[in-house]
Length: 121
Ligand code: AMP
Image 1: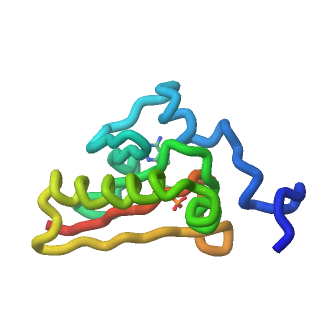
Image 2: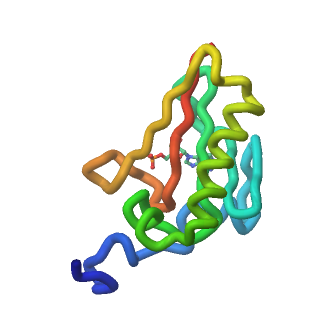
């Protein structure tokens, strides 16, 4: 595939997106969990009893970009952070949902890869 052209959304990481600012501590967040390469925090506009966002600390636009370019260590750290967040919030029972919006057509508003972790208690 062609990549790294100006038109490639996967290579066009905007360092001024809101999650990049959270990672640089320029704006606050309600932190739930942190690992070496990932961060979990409450969504500012929750749409369930529990609505947490989990993001890698590296500059990845979406899940395609992350799974293509992030190292194995970043990827395993990310999913460990998801699991540890569910442990911390005791979500395995009754269960939870993971949602990944991707691209404008997929409803993604913030161009830094994130999973929504949703649960109703
Ligand atoms: P998406 O539409 O998948 O890109 O989701 C972006 C999510 O980020 C939305 O659910 C927003 O409510 C959430 N959001 C935007 N700004 C912040 C912020 N400063 N802190 C926490 N969550 C945020």
